[in-house]
Length: 279
Image (tube, rainbow, N blue to C red; front, top):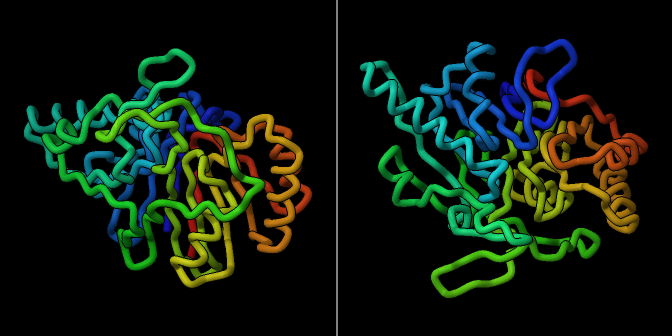
């Protein structure tokens, strides 16, 4: 499995890519290419071009959850495909995969829309759409984890505003937050978006779905910004037991959290341009 970071809050030193508060990761497993999230503005398209990654060959576009810093870049992907059709260029029609709540309207702190501004109906015009709360295997070893069971009290968080459902408006606990996991020779590689559902809960679900206790790496947002001490303590205890070979926390993970995590795990630098390969 090969993994390349296309969007993060930072770039690697002396790598001349664009960065923004958002996340997008390109994954190759066997002959399958997956785009995990699309960032905020669409800079992933330019970054991918510089890296020699052809986004027109992506088979699956997986959305970790519906927030704007992970979905608003979808506009740029749709433009890329639209222009390819006009020019008669070869392309793969992508399948968009997400939790059923991922494309609902959301608001927070007076902002009228912090969710994806594309509807499911609009996406259907540009590819297939597969919405599921259940785990879904994308390849023999790569799995969409589905709705995450929230297992740890120390990871409980207040609602992120409101979500507008067919049944009415409710507090937004981001139940659509999910992740990917890939089985490798060295254990699981878990790829997260923001981890609103809890980084420890996500890793536990990955271990359960994949029937594998070993964790080779966890990369992505850990949702640790000014995290309370009891949450940090619980996460450190958890990773002390799991003993991952490496951690690549990024995006929505602050410096204090990274320093704390480094006490119990091999925390490595992450940014746009990072390329990792796993057996």
